[in-house]
Image 1 (cartoon, chains in turn yellow, red):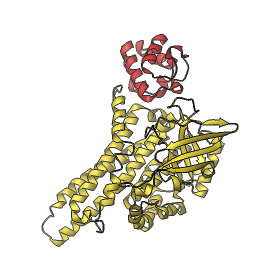
Image 2 (cartoon, rainbow over the protein chains, first blue to last red):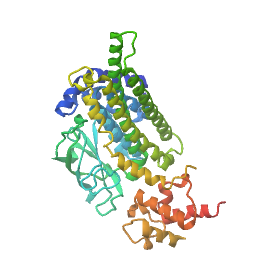
Image 3 (cartoon, rainbow over the protein chains, first blue to last red):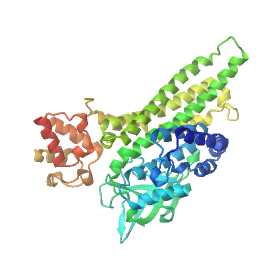
Image 4 (tube, rainbow over the protein chains, first blue to last red):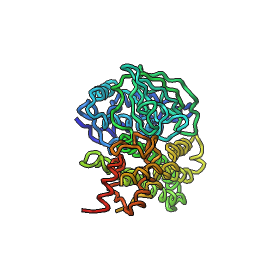
Length: 388
Length: 80
């Protein structure tokens, strides 16, 4: 049976309040994986939230998944981002497995064992260009092999499986890509680099050289071009934006509490910072409305007839890209505003109003798929769009 | 028309093979056409045939092969 939104959200809230939040400062300080929170998500069976009900999962909708990411993001942005990225991988498999027995069976297993899947799309010399691969899949009898120098694999060392992009064959054009699922036993990871970053430190995303050997059936038959435009990009931009919405919400909640305290100290006088709070509150509503609106529109397209075509259309791609750009900018603006409201109390790391982690985490948003790259894509699409 | 499309692909498609020798039903994305290159192909086609592709036609499939492009252009040149 499908879980209701309130059930999912109350589980996520409980994990956020009891586990993710209390460990967030340490995860950030030590740049370590938020294992307590991810274990809690596993215990509550939330890693299977995006798997269809008929395969044993929760069958949660896009809107529901977005809400869970938002709630987690309020307590620990790294936890929320790891969870969001896992959900994106599950969605790619669930929505593009076609009639594959292997992938149906794998999803059942993924729910049973609460498998955490990481994404391997980045690559040396290509950087973050999702739609280009250097590594190609080689056929070796009944097996297939691939070696990829990934520049970042979030929670790579902590994942139970990888979903990796590669050229269909070593001689295929760089844009003719497929996705291959690699189980833990199928690959070896050689670390290449470190993850000592400004923010999102708990995602533990250094580079790795992936050397893998798997079975042919572990390649999703669909073209990655379609998987990317119809699922990976929309899920990424909506769920990432939801994590950032969580960060913004939490930061503003601290600022709000700060202003309430000031007001209580001097009843009768509206604290000067209250105006700033009102402004930031306005921005948060803008951000929230945008994220929720695009999530529900996307959900409608994914479930409705003719949705596949609409999901691959330029207007939809523009909308997704605009959501990513605007939420990644708004989250920084809102957290900065919260910081200016709390002043030195927000600047101090050991204060109940500390906002340093929120700000550092928020600054990653514009960089994960760089906004300039997205603007360039949009600029190119606008050359042919007629708005007819 | 198909030869004109091949010429445009030769100039803007950035294919991994000679566009002038490509079969009309061949999948252009499998010979290296990227989304970015396809935008340039669209612009060149609009200019050459003096047409405008409406948004409903701005999909991967419509520009996926020479025959698909040719069918789309025909619809726009002689609307039925």
